[in-house]
Length: 131
Length: 120
Ligand code: HEM
Ligand code: HEM
Image (cartoon, each protein chain N blue to C red):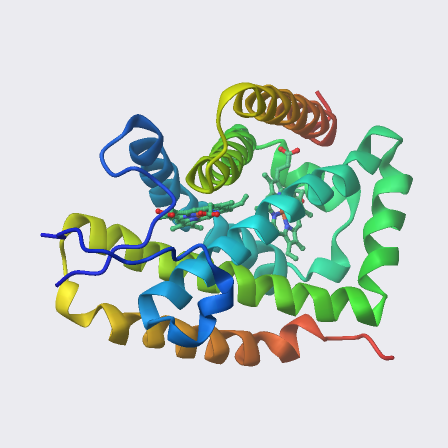
């Protein structure tokens, strides 16, 4: 099981050069988590155009989706979500005490898989939009 | 030696709920992305299409549960991260109040929108 040891003040981001894989995983997980909750608030705000009426909703979504920058941001959101999911699963395993010896490897695996899934989804996400 | 970095005190209620909601979110979030990007293109979303999905009681309930679980998990995460950074006393109470109000507002708004989408 996990044992405690003196990790120093890890909240001190000035020490980033000394960070280990687990530390980076923790920072990325925070960053992606905050992005997702921020997105959720925005998401509900956009979907709220449904309250004005069917046309407002359809026009709002299709208007946004016709913008190149929105598509780029959506790929970014996908990458953020995929990393948070994969690393989140990794954290759940760590808490259950499964695969503790492979913690670093599973973090790198999360990163690589996130990259692959994000790149693979680009054609679908960018479909029918031009700069 | 196992490394363990977390914003949460292990074994607490907040910690447990964070993990339970996470397990649920894995499934619905993946489902959501898949449905709205690959099965239906996001650019082709129309009110009629959304309504057709939302009219289905199972889908409606899934989305509302997704909304509640996502909001709880996200806000609980933010709150615990702040506590982990040393938030305490009056500030802690104020932050908690603000976060609770924001969450209840988001969930209420989301459910209202969902009902409107379903056309009920
Ligand atoms: C870019 C990616 C996304 C697209 C295109 C998208 C699109 C949509 C659409 C069109 C709906 C309306 C329901 C329907 O038509 O079936 C919806 C609902 C919803 N989405 Fe997303 N979504 C995305 C990402 C996300 C993410 C990352 C989250 C979680 C943080 C999320 C959470 C929700 C929730 C909770 C609802 C239900 C809203 C309600 O109950 O009022 N979505 N989404
Ligand atoms: C899809 C599946 C998801 C999984 C498996 C997951 C997993 C986790 C886990 C295990 C933690 C705790 C990390 C720790 O101990 O410090 C966490 C934190 C967090 N999650 Fe998620 N999560 C998911 C989805 C989401 C969503 C949809 C949101 C936003 C609406 C979100 C926002 C956050 C935030 C803000 C934190 C706190 C990060 C911090 O410490 O600052 N997560 N997640």
